[in-house]
Length: 265
Image (cartoon, rainbow, N blue to C red; front, side):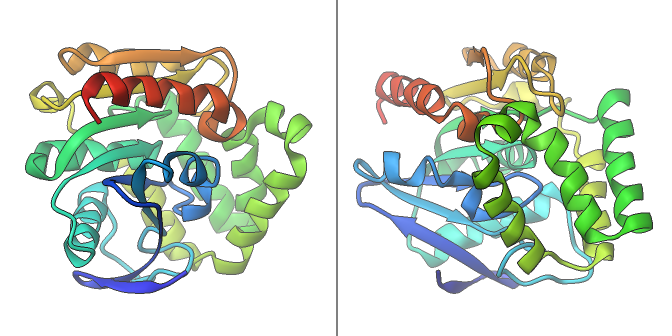
């Protein structure tokens, strides 16, 4: 997978297919591998693009400059470098927060939004969870951080039904993970993200997907987001955990297909 200059940083990215652009933004893990079940499916109709966030994978890992707003700026710079004027955009978890910034700050670059397993702003539940992840990284190191995080992101259904796939994803994390200070800075950005006073200004067709068994971002976050974005649609999957687009990829992809058809994508 190639690296490409995107504004201030070089990003590792992947693309597949032809047609209207469809950008997939990973969550806090930041790895483009997250979308393994979407890139093949949607690339028969779209030019699908995804990337490793700054601070993850094969992308540059500066010691500072981490926020959901900065990564939104990176995403726009990537589109610029690839010659893409507008795109459909899907963002999961932290990627959904990044998408909120894109929709508010760069609305002319977006056709429609797919928010999945994401949140509006950190409440006491999320604050305690993310703080615990940060403390584990600082006290026990990166491997324990990865293993602990998988309990929340993958959930028991993927441990039981997709264990080898889960281990493959963890292996790439271990091979490419940034130093602890970068990990903690990225965790901090999940706690400081807050566009709640402006979310109602998002006027792009929007689909919001959640899973009933998501222990990291419970469905009430999706319900809050759906209430804030006028005309948005809400899809709550019966199963899938925080990585619903991986565990329940058939149902997730079908929901997005239907949404794009209705939105004219």
